[in-house]
Length: 232
Image (cartoon, rainbow, N blue to C red; front, side):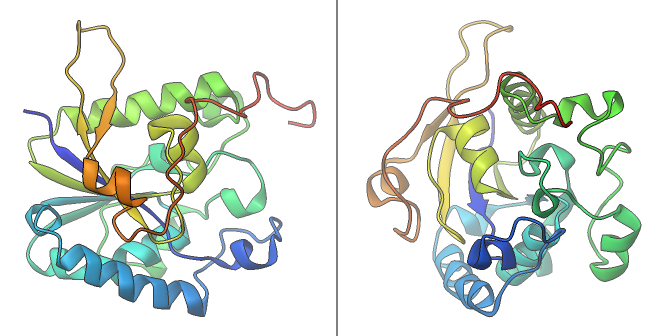
């Protein structure tokens, strides 16, 4: 049986405050750290989260910081934490391009980085085409990310990712900083059919596990470019 997914958006980071997207791989703000306290409490009180055996995080600093601030108690219980480039943010602005694995591993040891695509953090070259900022690439990347989780043996998996990718590529849902939603895999019609998620009623109706997020949904791929911008 496929796992239940708890999908989390990282807490507030520096670029979220200033709208300065030129900040490379930004860190959480003071408010972001405070949001993590609320998220940690909410997850600890969630019976499903207590069953999580695996944490997947985007290899970016703000998602790693959010993971370590909010699910540290799961890690202490033995849950594994792995970084996965599939869950990085969409754009090629500096704020959405990660640091080298050697750098983040030195800053945040204890995470399994062996599962990160060796092309990381490239998002523009032919070698990094699966991470290109196009509708086709992002939808395909989301499907690849979901396929990997669909085949996992764990019953509950926590994923810490980014609003754009979670909304446009994976769920169609809005995620406020440090909010989460719970999903099950929908039944698949055939082996080649796309992976689809069905949200738990509680997080759907409330607007996220903490009730901080918008309840409206958008079609997957909405607002994404069909082709790479000429500059790229």
